[in-house]
Each structure stands twice: as structure tokens, then as C-alpha cells.
Length: 431
Ligand code: NDP
Image (cartoon, rainbow, N blue to C red; front, side, top):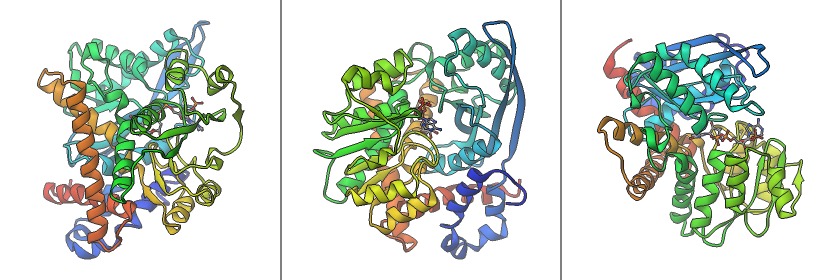
């Protein structure tokens, strides 16, 4: 901790993983000999750079760019880019650290990395976003490539931003290197299902938790926080499986729609018009409330907005109202205290590094299609995603059993994710 002051989110992510690893290190002394735990907590490389750009009034603006290349034992670094004013090195490191274990859990040949900027795309014109993305990529292009490091989207980075980033990469490298970025549009190397993958994958994971306990989504009340990419497609899949999502949110507050969220309206407002949930509320005669979305009674909660959005008080409210399943669509949305409360109360809890791994897994499927110059159908790709999520669920559950914590998906995900990376690191020597 002393080596990385002022990085509380990174400390939180590391502590949560290390707390699970005691029995693993005891069982495999070779990991201690090779200092695997120490090495896995230290990024292989971190790049911090200046991103100057010119706004629509002709003024020079300045942001900071980051790429943390955390671990490449399993394959090229892989992880998204986040554009949000809260981005700093500690946030990028926490996300990069989580990404190592998540990518390992998918079983695919991808290492862990993450990046982003404190740039806020909200309220910026398309031209401003384009100029920012071009400036960001002017530095980043030296550090990425399909065999090196493959970025994708995250908060504030959707199809529009990926387009501008890929365009600038193509221009600077003078190569149509599709595999250098994922989340691309369908006409220029993208994969069907990538847009839906994280939200769908989270629901597939939750569905497997329900199924193995003799239940299903049919007739369940569900609360989904956020209203961005992950939240929208989580809502879509819950509705397809017979559940009803009764609440969603954004950073301005949450709304309840007892008839079930009208997804077409939400997509129009968020994806096309880029407006707040208040526009949805106005249209449907509902209210946006500025309290805690976790006060809304539900059977299943899917936190899908941002880190530490589900605090202890939220967990207590969920438990009091009878919620029995929580699956994290976002990265580390649940605080350690809240997680403890939920698991103590017997709530089945799926950590993000397992439950939201469908996004990066489908990015790896996009890379496969790019490498073979092929494009698969929606049905085929969705079937593969569903199978990957079932496999991750089973791997977490079996590993938790094996290491003496049956039913604990947190322990299962941390240990199963760690083992694959640790074995590769031992095999590759001290590098
Ligand atoms: P989007 O930018 O599409 O949506 C983010 C949503 O969360 C918006 O509704 C936003 O509201 C809300 N939000 C963001 N920051 C805050 C905040 N500080 N307080 C309250 N609400 C906030 O991002 P994604 O849907 O892509 O990402 C959501 C989460 O899922 C993140 O944790 C991300 O790391 C994780 N994730 C995403 C993957 C992907 O494939 N996209 C893959 C795996 C994980 P507002 O618009 O008002 O800011």
C-alpha cells in the first residue's frame, strides 16, 4: 500500500483478491517461491500522457490519458478505455487489476489492461469528441496493436468514440488492423452481440445462479442501476427471460416504472438522443428520485453503473426487502462492507469479474472473427456467449467447493482467475 499512495480503489480491488488466496498459496508453494502474488500486483507498464485538443470555440483544452498494461502472461493486454472526469491512475489500476482475473476466467488467450482519460464526453459536440479521440490516439497508437494491447469501450466510450479512435489508429499506422480495437461497428470489423454482450452475459450468469437453485427469471422483479450500455442490455435480456425490470438510474437519480421499463424508449433517449433518465420519466409520467435505488423492493439486483455504488445501507435495504440474488454488471459496484452483509444474509452474490466477463469474452470472439476475416451470425455468437457464461459460473462454483467455500462465487472467481495466470507466470519464468 505504501508504494501506491492515494489509490484507494486499487487497494480495495487488491485486498479483495488477496483475501481469497490464502488456501491457494498454502497448497501451491511454487507460487510463493516465484513471488507470483507480489508480481501480479505490479503492472508490467503504465503510460501517462498529455492529451491537448481544441474545443468548438477555438480554445485549447487539456486532459490526461492513461494506459496500464497490467499482465500479459496469457496473451496481449486486453481491456477497455474509460472517459469520465473521475478517471485517475488509481481507478485505471483497479480496473486493470480486475481485468487480469476476469480475462483469465473467460478461458481465452488475453492478458489484462485498462486505460482512459479524465475527459468528459457529456455535453461535447461530435466534432469535439472526435478531436479529443484523435489526440488521445496520437499518443496511444505507439503502445497498442493486435499482438500487443487491444483496447475497447467502457464508461463514456461507446460506438462513436471507438470509431474515431480506430480511424486515427488506422491513419497513423497505415494499416487496416481490425484486431487492434474491439467494439467496432458492424460495417468495419465489429461483431454482432458485442454491444449487448456485457448486459446479456451478466443476466446469463444470474440465470445460471437461479437455475442451480431451482428457480428462473420468470416472474421476478429486478432492479438494474445505471442506464448505459451494460444496464440497457441487461434489461433487454431480463425481459426476454420473463422477468420485469422496475427501476433504473443515471447519475442524476433513479426512476421506478412498475409496468416494467419501456426499453425502446430508454434506448431512444440514451443511445440516440443522449439525454438523462428524466426525459424517460417525463415521457412516461414518472418521477426521478434522488435517493437510493436499492430501496426499491426486488428479487434480483444488477448493479450496472459504476464502482462503489452499492454501499452497506443499500445492501441492508435489499436484504430487508427480500432480495436474494445480486450479480454485478459493473466493475466493483459493491463495497466490501455491503458484500459481506449480503453474503452473510445468504444472498447469492456474483462478483463483476465473473458476472460481467461476457463483454470481454465477446471482444475476444470479435478478435477471432477479425483474424479469420469472418463474421458470425447473431444466434451463433449469442450461443457462444451463453456457453462461456455458463462455463464461468461452473468454474467459479467448482473452485469455491474445492477450496472449502461452497456457494461463494467471490472466492471461486478470485481463485480460478488467479490459478490460470499464476501457472502461466511460473512457466514463463521471472520476467
Ligand atoms: P456507460 O457510460 O454506457 O453507462 C454508465 C452508466 O452508469 C450511466 O447510466 C451513467 O450515468 C452511470 N454512471 C457512471 N458514473 C456514475 C457515477 N459516478 N455515479 C452514478 N452513476 C454513474 O458505461 P457502461 O455501461 O459501459 O459501463 C458500466 C459499468 O460496467 C462500468 O463499471 C464498467 O466498467 C462496467 N463494464 C462495462 C463493460 C462494457 O462492455 N461496456 C464490460 C465490463 C464491465 P450518467 O450518464 O448520468 O453518467
